[in-house]
Amino acid sequence: MSTFRDAAKDGLSKGDLEAVLRQVGVERYHHLHPYHHRMVEGALSKTEMQAWALNRYCYQAMVPRKDAMILARATDPAFRAAWRMRIEDHDGDDGWSGGIARWLHLATSLGLDADSVKSERLALPATRFAVGAYLTFCTDKTLLEAVASSLTEMFSPAIIGERMSAMLARYDYVTEDTLAYFKHRPKQASRDADFALAYVLDHADTAERQQAAIDALVFKCDILWTMLDVLQHAYGEDGNIPPGAFRPEHVQ
Ligand SMILES: O=C(O)c1cc(C(=O)O)c2c(n1)C(=O)C(=O)c1cc(C(=O)O)[nH]c1-2
Image (cartoon, rainbow, N blue to C red):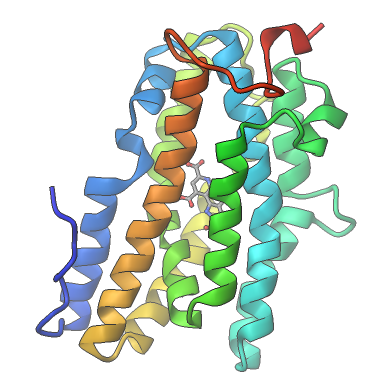
C-alpha cells in the first residue's frame, strides 16, 4: 500500500502517470471497503441498505452542482460542451428525469419516503461533511485537480457491476426496477472517465501538476471511503447512530 506522496517527483511519462492513477484505484477505491464487502456478500440488514441509499442520495444530488462549478471555471467551449453532458445525465431535461430521480427511485423502492430522502435531513452529519468537502475541493482547487478528482469514475463500472449482481442475487427485496439507476451509469461513467483522463494526461505537464492530479484522485477516494466508514460506524454492529440521523423507526 502506498501513500502516493512522491509518485511523480521525477516527472512521469503519460503512460506512467496513467498507470499511477489506475494504481490509486487498485489500492484506495471503495470496492475495498468492508461495508461494500458486506453488501455484496448479502450481509447488510435492510436498515443498512436503506441508510446507504439515503446517504448516497446526498452525493448524487451534489454531483451536478460540482460539475457546474467545473463548467463555470472552464474557458474552452469544447471542454464545456463535453462536461455539461454530466449535468444533463443527472438532472435530465426537467430536473427529475435523470440520475438524481433514478437514485430517488432506488431509495423509495427500498421503502424510504421520497420527501425525507430529498430533504437530506436524515443523512449522517459526516456524510454531509464529506459531500461538502468534494464540492469545496472542486470549487477551490485548480481545474486540473477538479477534473482529476472525478477519475474515480474509471473504477466505478466494475464496482457497479459487482454490486448489481450481488444485490439482485442476495436481497429478495431488490429487483431490476430498484436498480434502474445503475443500468445507465457504467456507459456514462466510461465516457466521462475517458474524457477526464485524456484531459489530465494532456494538462498535467509538470511533475508538480502530475502530483497534484494524483493527490486529487487520492482525496476523492478518501471521500468515497469516508462515506462508507460513517455508515459502518453508525449502522454496523454496535452502531452509534448520531442524534437526528435515519433510524429504522423512520420507515413505516
Ligand atoms: O456507485 C458508485 O460506486 C459510484 C462511484 C462514483 C465515483 O467513483 O466517483 C460515482 C458514481 N457511482 C455515480 O453514480 C456518479 O454519478 C458519479 C459522479 C462522479 C463524479 O465524481 O463526478 N462519481 C460518481
